[in-house]
Amino acid sequence: MVNYQTQHLDHTFSALADPTRRAILQRLTRGPATVGELRKPFSMSAPAISKHLRILEQAGLMERQKKGRTHWCSLGPSPLANAEEWIHKQRTLWNGLLDSLEIFLEENPK
Amino acid sequence: MVNYQTQHLDHTFSALADPTRRAILQRLTRGPATVGELRKPFSMSAPAISKHLRILEQAGLMERQKKGRTHWCSLGPSPLANAEEWIHKQRTLWNGLLDSLEIFLEENPK
DNA sequence: TTGATAATTAACCATTTGGTTAAGTGTAGA
DNA sequence: TCTACACTTAACCAAATGGTTAATTATCAA
Image (cartoon, rainbow over all chains, first blue to last red; front, side):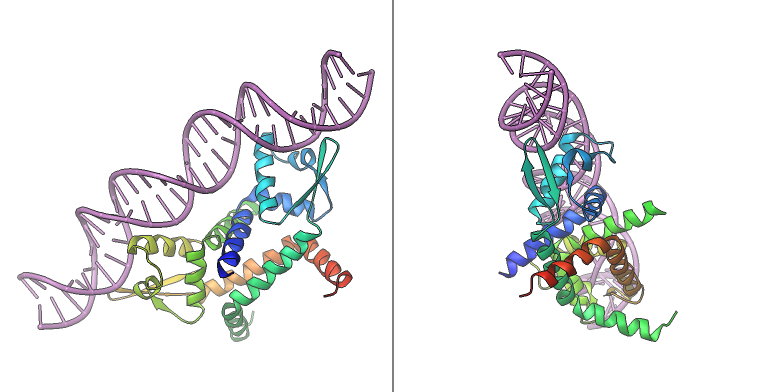
């Protein structure tokens, strides 16, 4: 149980640790896209993008729907639940830190 | 500039991607600790812990103060500013996603 | 049916990561 | 001064990561 959460966080954070993958996620917040479309901004081979997508998918951050020969990628709906879970975990795991942050910010106004 | 931010996020997220490092950070939210103290919960060599600490330090998540032969590790004060920066970036970068999340949650009450 | 297109899988490669043991640095204390 | 202690650095290793090219799968359309 704890182990599951831990592994999940591992996957989420390592998925987010790559700039290409973050850019892809950012793009997807503006709506679904095909693999080819997602590839365009990068000077990178198709298999490289394919691997990034698989990592995002396995981390639960992205979903895929095949329509004919094109794959449509999107964040929803389960990635939204996933993101919520992630944010929630952040808030619980880092609770102490966030509290300290508030105190620090109060004690050190701009 | 953008590149700096990007690299910074890379460092932050890959630092957070390791369970040992997250556990160390969690421990530090309860106050400063020596390297030896931080090591105790793990069945891991001292050099291994040393490397993890260096990664956290380089990501700006941890600070170190040498008192004699013992090193005291803590989150503050700059790590707090750092964490704030990180959260802020999350909120701006993922703005669209978070908005969608709220809509999703409204449309799908528990 | 045949050829082009969208995408993945397979095989490979260099670099990074996360660990180890052994040796080194610097401080504390008898 | 000598030894124990806290910790890091050096050198090494196996596995994971992020990329490549070549081959494969599956669909569309002429």
